[in-house]
Length: 379
Image (tube, rainbow, N blue to C red; front, side, top):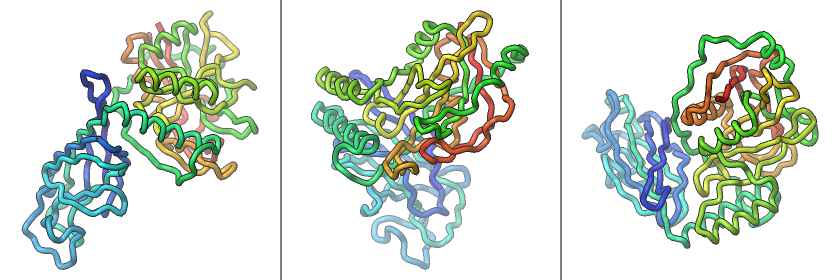
């Protein structure tokens, strides 16, 4: 298997420049999709080393009885790659630099068809430098917007759904303090609905975090943590995408669908993504102000999921966003980004009555959770 461990943004003099990725490639698997999207003008640097008891990325001298995936230019056990599912294999070895000429997906495997003497993995580090020309920027942005319009509203060129699953930036998970929640707040949390619903009253995403604090504290904390308020409508989004493109900026406020809690749509929608990937991959959540305060402070309830690509909407057959089914990861990601601001006083985990363990969202995608609410108290 390929295990995509982490992706980290790389700064440059002009702002965002690219990503680094850490991957683990197993010798026992065939071609595996890294889910990394490459675009014209991107530059990719690949460095590989043997993992613990692993194969050398440069291969071995042990012969294989069956034909290798790459016979002519790569020894058995070497790390090989290809661009696109039907692309021609090439030797990667311990180091490879690539200049991307067209939009592609990156694949890796070990050059073997028989069992190898080594059984461990190959550790791969990728450094992806994005193309930065204005023409490429506008091309990517236009393609991204068209894909999103097609999936959400049936507008624009038709095409197959794209499944993009980039890595989640790593962050420390806050430890729950020893100070317990008081009985009154627990009772109020138990009274909350467990899930939100769509306009057809179809149950969907679970509520997985609660924030205690004023609206100003909430807005300030999420702004400091790098979250952006989503545009509220497609009309607003189309206007803003034109404006930011004209100004040479990135569009990162893609509208999100409306969901309902307390018989009303979300009060706020926040999202976080890199340029261009916001169409298919983004961290995002919706917030509703609860009907009750606590100790004179407002209480906000949220439903957070991580969009990782596109899939079929089981309600109508159209294309919709695909979510990471382990929704607790998004709960922890939200916590980690807020913790980095220093604006959190404390957090608690609370297991409400009738917790959600497994369910499906409003579009029919399954998800799972430990059922706990993350309760965040802002300073």
